[in-house]
Length: 227
Image 1 (cartoon, rainbow, N blue to C red):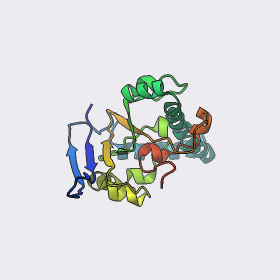
Image 2: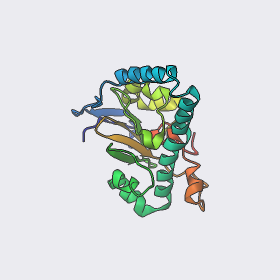
Image 3: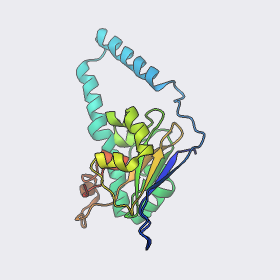
């Protein structure tokens, strides 16, 4: 599966103290176009369909808002949070998740559709962030509705070129010793970040751990317990 993987390295920490950031991208051919059509065209069709249904009193604006709220606050990010919480508390599940995310997520009682999912792990040495540089591919069933900034041209272009600066604007200031890796989602593969487990959570069960997980941490623009 193709992806653009940008690596941003920090200070090498050698005796001459020649610290530097280096960035390199691997551009592979991969399609961002959704088989159903252009994303902007799909949005226009969705708006037109919503207007028609409202006009004919087949749905209400309240029901539309309820569905959006469900995806934003419950169905999406809560699913991803459950996956993260289990990975934190079950090393065997974590290993399966990092090796075969689709297979591991199949162990839960929700569906993620036909998308191919890959989970990348944050560690003390590496911080991951996710983007879709050409459109807004995103694992909705795990993370809910994508935030507006995720779809903005500024985020999509800058997170690849200057990831440390963008992350700093989100409040994530990383030591030079931490590598930054940026993963480019597409219609073929969607990425999700497995955040580091925050300090002070020993003894919490999966449900309590899930409450500590945020959508932004699973995109990679937040470090839980570390601002």
